[in-house]
Image 1 (cartoon, rainbow, N blue to C red):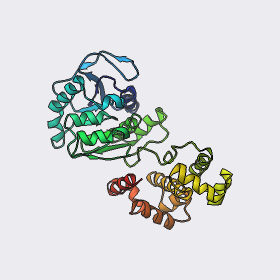
Image 2: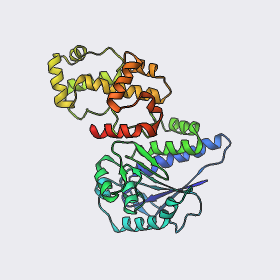
Image 3: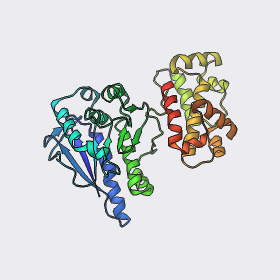
Image 4: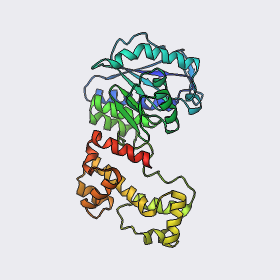
Length: 340
């Protein structure tokens, strides 16, 4: 049984606590329904017995930070709003010192049963404690620069939902903490339990380590032009359609040349570039759910598996089958994320 120790700091984001905690609680319930013992012992600890959270709700009866780990322990570091996470405080320094004393040796030990789980800006607390080292990690997109400053040797990865590097796991934002929790539940309890938890929590799409923090379906949408949004909505909803620049222009009620100008000005890409990105993302999701290259190409709107392979190679390098091999494709996805 794993002690799941949530470390609470002043102004902690409530969803960083409640979202993952609920996922692990439900995992215990599903294990019990299968006649198996619970796997996670949820504990909540802080430097003081009561603290106010980001929404003003006070959490009380918090246990003291333990002096030693008496059982296999996953320490969960929850985040704070950016305004608080950017700067330290006496409470943060005290917690960082406790982390350094308690976790440095276990994280360096071979085959350690302990691990560090950083939700959102919780990665900054791990960095202040000197626990990230040269590992891969991520955090909320607004705080990536701060994380790089606090952990200069770390491999800070942009635009990723979560990352797991040995005993250290980190997630990009508050809801990404739920994705990370489901991933850890799948590792510890099996995919069936994780799927059941996701269904209970009505998680529409369980994201993986390869998924970007900003969904391609949301990229290039930070504008206010109604006609461009109308075309983007239609293309992202049905990328498999026989889209042409003419059919997109007809949907926007403008000429093809004017639609190209509108897209470049407001979305930053051409309409056909946007269509290609939607098709590639649809194909990638299909591949990760077990589809063959031929089927993935068909459901995404590519004329053939060969056309998908060519588009994939231009975008990320390698082959569509790399979607099934995270270690192989990770550098390509990271390079593409930086390029965009």
